[in-house]
Every structure is written in C-alpha cells, then in structure tokens.
Length: 558
Image: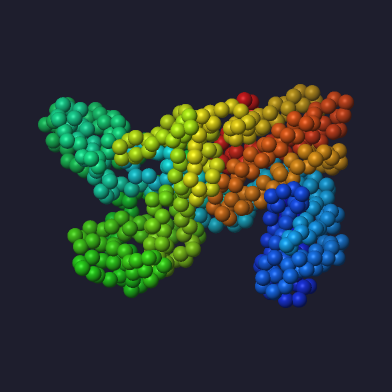
C-alpha cells in the first residue's frame, strides 16, 4: 500500500459523509488507525461510533450505511481495485482490507524513495526549538539526563524528517545557590588537597569528581600553597567549576551522539537589563503587584494554582524570573513552537511558565512542555541507588561504557515519556533476540549480507510488479514496512519517539520470521528470488531509516 492510501481513504470517507443526513457537519470526527490485529484489515475507523454519540443513532446501523455508501462510490474513486473488502464489526468499527495490488504498491514506493522514504513536508519549514537536558553544570550527566538526551535528539531527528526546521538548544543554569554550592565544594576540596583539615558541608557536592576538578583547578592555576589559594575568591571557583563541568557535559553528550545548535547561558540572558525589560512588559499588562516587600506575578489568573514571587523582599530575583526572560527570548527568535523537555521534578513549573508566556502575549499552546520520567538502572536484577548530590549514582558515561551508545540510546527510548523506565544492563549487553536493539541491528546486517551474496551471484532486484509474492509472511512484512511514514507522523504529533522503537522491533520480528520460513535466493527460481530480494531490500531501507532517526548505527555485519 502506498503512503498516500490513508489520505485517499480519508477523502473518500469525507465525501461519503456528505451524503449522509446530518453527518456532514461532523466530518472532522474522521480518523483512521492501523488495527492491533491484522485480521481487522489494514485500516480501521471508529467514525460511526463517534457519529452515533453526536447524532444519537445506533453505531452499527451508521457503520453499515457508511460502508454501503463507500462501496457504491468505490468504482469511481482512486481506490478502485485497491480495496478488497469493507467489513463492519460490532459495536460499529469499519475495517478496510486492501488488495494485493495496493499492498505491493507500498513496496514499490519504498524502493523508489530509498533513504528518503518516510520523509515529509508536513512541517512546512515551521521553526521549532527543542531545549533538552539543560542539566546544571554541577557534575557529570546522570542516566535521567541520558534519557532526556535520547528523547530530545530522536524527536528532533523525526521532526526534521517531517519537514520542520528544528533548533536544538541547551540552557546552562550557571547562576544561583547550586552554583555557589559548587564553588564552595571545589574550594574546600582544594584546601583538603593542600593538606588542610576541612569540615565539608552536608549539602555540598560530595562525589569523587569534585576532588578531581579541584585537583585540575590547582594544576591549571599553578597553586601549591594555601596562601596562594587564599588569593582566589568564591567567584573564581564558581567560574572554573561551571566551565570545566560544562565541557565535561558537552563531551559526554557528543559521545552519546547528541549535538546542539546552540548553548544559552542564564548569566548572559538574565541580566539586570533584560530582567527589568521583562518586568516592564508585565507591569504594562497589569499582571504584577507588590506584597510584603516582594514583587508578585498574577499567575493564578492565567491557569496557575497560585501567584508567584519574581523579586524577593531582599531584592534578589527568583529562578522563575530568569526563566521568563529565557522564554521571552525564545519566542522573539521566531519559533512557532517551543518544546521544553524536563525531568519529573519540574512538573510543578509547567502552569507558571505557560502563564508567563501567555502574559507576554504569545499563545500558551505554542509552548509544549514534555516531562520525561526517571529511569531505574538494574544490574543482575537489582536496582542501583541514585543520589546526585552525594555522587552515588551511575552516570551516563558509565552506562555507555558498559553497554555502548546504541544500546543506551535505544533502551532510554523504549517506554513512553510519561512512563518510568527500567533499564536492564545485562539485557542491553546480550547479543541475542532478547535484546531488542541487537535484534533490529542484526536484521539489518543479515539483509545486507544476503544482498551482498546476491550481487556476487549476479542476481538483480525487481523494482515493480511483484506478482510472485504470495506468502502470508511476505505480505505481513510488506504491510508493516509500509506503515513507516505513518508511524513517524504519530511520533511527530505526539512529540514522543517511543512508538518508533516498538515499530522497529515489530518490523525486525516479521523479517526474521519471513527469512526463517522462506528461502530468499533460489537459483532454480530466479524471478521469485528477484522479488524477495526487493522485499528484503525494502525492509533494510526502513530499518536503516528508523535506526538513523533514533541516532543508532545500521551495521552491515555483526
């Protein structure tokens, strides 16, 4: 089936609804989905069920009326000879079964488009900014940051593939209490390295990496005595810590295959001038007031559960104030959609930031905030404890070192954003069908090996007219790989790459099932071999395109 089949079917359904009394006004209810079981056909619609609620009619009767009207109109439509049967199933689903001709056209389309298969112009070049990870530069990245990185990067790739202009950004929080604490922790470790006895604060950053950074500080500043160290103020330690650990984060993300279009720093964005400018705008909008010496934002009138302090009674500004400045800058840069990817500890910030965006004059729905739940790392069936402040956690770098970049990225994407993730280190290292990323990459490598052998045997791939493909496993595979463009559309609409990981596993499973049951290369039946080679090449294209969008390699041998 060709990628535009769904669009043609939707148009036909709309046309049919205009012929049903009272139904034309609710044509927006039309939707087509891929059924969970192939026995229900290639596409299914619940339009009759949705219409029944609006029109207060029996859904089964409506479904049969719609089906009969489609059948009467079918011979004059583009779908003639592409729809084999249309069945109505209780309580009112309409299922569409396609002909072999329609299914085979999907194979032709994949071979024709190759690495561009699944690419779309639906985004129309709209500018989208995706800000993700943005971890405070106070230590190496954790697995929670790793999951956010995998999600943000894969989602960016998918949206670019769908025709959006995507800008990936990292926001460096280089101000505030945590940065002061970082500077103090570095200073104390430096003093300790020089022989002083110190009292390390309970809330200080206690990981071994702090001692390592302090050692580098002493080396690079050529400090050998406490007298020399006393000449450095807290700002020097803060500045060094931020710069050094930001470089660490950049390197770790680069090793993870994540590269940004820009890095914004809070210290450069939220200046006294820019903060005052934002406050003036909010004053003009009438959403600021003073109470008990503090400056408040009337966010409760804009969807938040309560008003928020912007300037405390001691004259200092809250972190939220800097966040408002940052989001104002985002929209001023001309993005039609701004996507923030945060951890679950920031869930309470959603309503207040959206309120600020609306108060500044932008559509609050243009800001999409995605909450990525935490990941628990398991080794030998036991969860590993996590404590960032105490440094008792497994870092992203450690995970990559243990299972590799590809497995780490894939496993981080294997659950929906809102679902907690359990990452099994032992499973991620297995080279067996139990390991999903290995299973997918092995399918790609296996196909490449077969195609290489075919080329050496001077066998050619057929490009169109697949009359000899009749086996159930062949058509199951064709139908699955033909769904690739639609899967990407769903990922883009939901702003979640998870579905692509599940889809690739299903496609790989169907390929292995086909290959295990049927011979691809048969010297006694060259024509059939030619068509089956085309089939597996199409499967390889889809697997490669999917792996590439997830930021994974598509190996030629394993």
